[in-house]
Amino acid sequence: MIHLITGAGSGIGAAVARALHERGDEVWLLARTAERAADLERALPGARTVVGDLADPASLEAITGLPERLDTLLHIAGVVDLAPVAEVDADQLRAQVDVNLVAPMLLTKVCLPALRAAQGLVLVANSSAGLTASPTWSAYAASKFGVRAFADALRGEEQDHGVRVTTVYPSRTATPMQEKVHEQEGRTYDRRRWIQPETVAATILHVIDLPPDATIPEVTIRPLVPRPT
Image 1 (tube, rainbow, N blue to C red):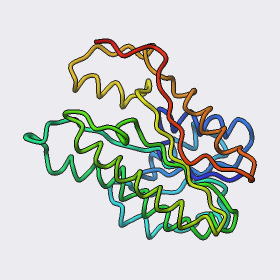
Image 2 (image 1 turned 180 degrees about the horizontal axis):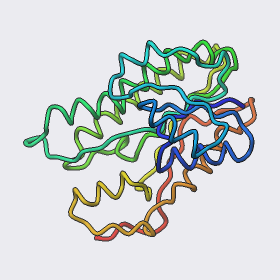
Image 3 (image 1 turned 90 degrees about the vertical axis):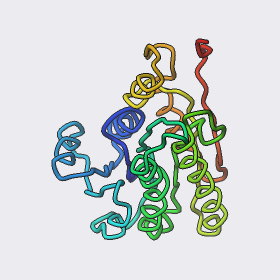
Image 4 (image 1 turned 45 degrees about the vertical axis):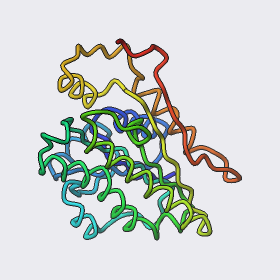
């Protein structure tokens, strides 16, 4: 199988890339810069890289050299900055919408011919914030509600082409992003309390490996240990 993955540098994306690489699949990784691409190639020998900046979504439409067939396009990259609406920063708001919503839409557009050729899968790693918005999460949640709508629309548009679309909603996961969120919330970070990236990766691989007679439109993952109050 051939996969294109965003966000493979850390967290859930890195866990998915490792798992697919270890089982011998052909892995393509989107990197922000040539230097970052070299880092990813060293981490996963044999992986292919393509340079594209999710923070500059319009540049993604100029990407060339992608494979002619793609079994999966895995949108796992994301950014978050918490702030109440009264204090929201315009640049941080724009960055979250660009990376979390606009970039997946435009990258999917570029990859659709290859996905149709393989009757492949588009998977969006969303968030529980794409289902419920909490105070200080307005910008991030808005971007995630938006990418949820994108996936729902795409699912209907592409079913006649044999392309499946799945949204995965992980709750808090032990990633560098979650550590940043805890810092912004003023909370002590204990990665043992949260879902491990490998657990989310295992769920994503289950979706990838689903036989062609069925689809999983959505799947939600919650931590077993209740959130501390």
